[in-house]
Every structure is written in structure tokens, then in C-alpha cells.
Length: 178
Length: 231
Image (tube, rainbow over all chains, first blue to last red; front, side):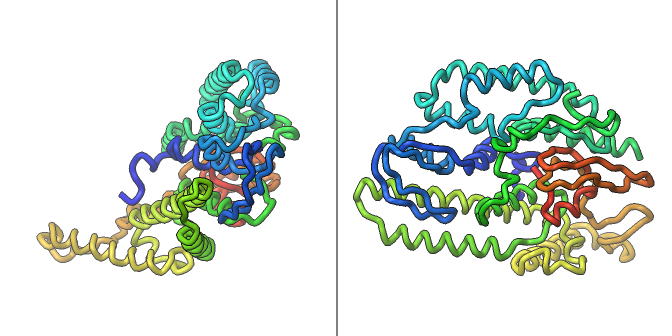
């Protein structure tokens, strides 16, 4: 098969991390480095301790080689996530979270948890957020028919999770309505 | 309700003013970034049920840049630790772009294998597929037909030999299912969008940043105009 069977119904989680890797993040370089001219854009020059914007994959690569410290993105703080969790639990709609919040948080916590204050608390908050949103998604399934369904503020990983099931359900309903 | 559908009374979804700043650059129109454009194109191709037009200039441009970069890396190879790290960065980026291109081409080949005859018979097939893809499609179709014929068709009476017959509603030629659901994200304000389902008209308000699951045919034109993206 030209496209492997595992890739056909939805994106694989690895591919989702790949896509999220393009999102920009700020880093504080530890060593002086000249500007790097990549195909996508030119990054740098890196002059400690000035923060620089680079794509996430580049930041994680540098972090693994101990060339920088990561600056957590503004939404990856205990205060912000607690506020979002409250909103999530009180309101019916999904609260606004960055499209790639799950993958980015996972990648950052995996390689750079020492740069994130309160990493454990953040992990717990993310887990709670994910569970609340999942249960909302299940409730929303009842609203699915063969016309259309709005699901705003759903993040990419969540969409990918429900994609195979929702697509199949939609198709079956479409056939029934005929 | 966490989701809205046409069954509910209209209620605009969450205010997104703060979210817009945080939200993905999927809706960004900032710089002309070929890698981001190819990522978008690749995501569209993966999710769309039919073959989308081939983005020849984009792919050719990136392949050329990769080759240039590869030449540069070869020239600057040295045993200096610092440079090793930097050349590793170059190579990582090249691998990332290569993966995008490969996956894009593989997705297209998968669809070409599925809908070979239908695609070759379309009047605009040359915009749809690259020259190599057309050659691939022709060879594949020939292979398939010869195989079918030699393995069992030749045993049947000659009137049953055709492999592209139409019988009432049923067509032997596999066509793309345009009614399949897709998840899409609105990049520009579309306002009220209408489309026909059977004999009834459906409509919904589509604002920038909204996410919908909807049948492909309804947003096909918006996709071509670049006002929505499939996710």
C-alpha cells in the first residue's frame, strides 16, 4: 500500500508531534552561536542571555545537546491552566486552548521539565483538562447527524482521536438518511 | 451542549479574542513560508477524499532547496564539535522536509491507485497529477486490467470482458466519495454558507477559527479558494 494502513484513518501521534514541532517557542541560549540559515528561515544569532524565537523541534534539539534553556509558553503555567480548567468544568463549550497544546506540553515536559516551574502540578492539570474535554466530546457525539457539527476549540490531538469514530458514524448516518 | 449543530438554536461559540493570539499559526497569513504551506497542503491531501491538484512549484522548489542545503552540509563537514551540532540541525531540517514530501507523494499515490480510471478520464487530469504520476497511473491501470483479464476474465464469454461498465446506479469504475465527512477549520470569515443535500438546502454560519465536521462536497469550493483548511 502506498500509504501504510496505520496512516489511513487518521494521523499517527508521531505525525501530530511532527506538525506541532513547527510552532515557535522562546529559548535562552547558553552559548554564543552564529545565525543558522535553514531552508525554512534563518534563526539566531544566539547571544546569551537574550531569548530567541525558534521552532519547537529546533529548541528540543538544542535542549538535548545542552545548548539552551526553554522558556515555557505563556499558556503552560499553573495559573493559566487552572483558570482554563475552571472554565472547562463550569461551561458547556470547550474552552480556548492552543491548537497543539497536548503535543507541545508533552514534548516540552518530556525533554525540558526542569525548565518548567511546577511540572508535576502542570501534568496533573493537563490530565484533568484532557479528561473533562473527553467527556464533553462523548456528550457531543449525541449531536452528530449527517448534516454538520460545530466543535470549536477542540485541539488537534483530540480531533484526531475522535476522527475514525465520528467519520464512520457520520457515514453510517448518511447512508441511513438516504 | 459542547458541540453545536443545526438542531440547536443559534448560539455563537466561545469568544476567541484571547485565544486568537494563542491559537495555531494554521490561520496565520504572516510570511510566505514554503514549509508551512507544504504542511498545510499535506494535511489537506491526507484528509480529502479525492485527489487535490498537484502543487508542482512548491514541491520542486523545496526539493531544490534540500539539494542545495545537502551540498552546503557536505562542504562544511568538519570534526569541530560545534559545527557537528550545527550540521546535525541542518540535516534534521532536511529530513523533516523530506518526510513531508514523501508522505505527500505517498498519499497521492494511494488515491491514484484507488481511483485510477476515474482520474485518467477527467478532462483536467494534467493539472491534477504530475507527469510521473500520470505515467504511474497508466502503467498501474494497464497492469490491473491485464491481470484481471489473464487470470479469470478470459474464461468468461467476450461480452463480459469489459472492466468499466455502468449498470443502472452501479458503476464498475471506482469514484471518489465526495460525501465523506471531513474536519475543517475556517481560515477566513465565510458568513452563512449553503449547500444542497438531496433536495434540501443546508446552511450554517462559518466564522474564522471555527472547527466543523461536515461533508466534503459542502466545503470543496471553499477549500479550493483556500478559505478553509482540512485538519
